[in-house]
Image (cartoon, rainbow, N blue to C red):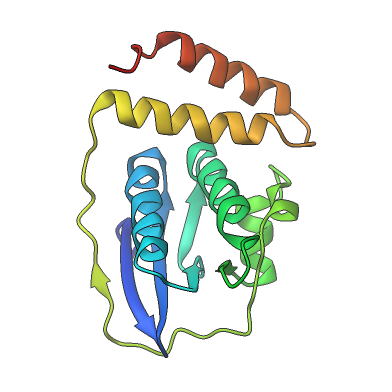
Length: 165
C-alpha cells in the first residue's frame, strides 16, 4: 500500500525529528519550513529530517532544504541534518546535484513509535509565493547546472508578487 503524502514530527532522545512520507512538494514546503523554524525558536539544538520514506522532492522543497541547511547548520551548537540512505540520496538529489549542499547523518535512527502527523496548513498566496520564490532563488545562487533557470524563475515570481504592506 502506498503511503499518503504527509509530514510527521517526533522526538528521539531529546532531538526533534521531522519525517516526510511520500512526496515533498511546494504544498508541504512552507509548512515544513515553519516547523523547523519553530523547533529552533524553541531552542532546539538539533533537528533531524528523515527522508527514508520520501519518494519525491520538487524544486521548492529542495530549495527549502538547502535554505534551512545554510541557516541552521553553521551557527555554533545548531545542527540541521538529513537522514537518507545513499540509494535514497541518489533517488531524491542526483538529477539536481543538491546533495553537495546538504548535511547527511545516517548514524541516527528514529526509534520512536510516537509520531504525530502534522496538519498541512495552507498559507496565504502572497506568503506561499514568497516562500517559493526564496527557495528557487536559493537554488539559483548555487554552482549547479541550470542554476540560471532557477534564478529566472525566482525573478519572475518576485515580479508577480504584490509588494509587502
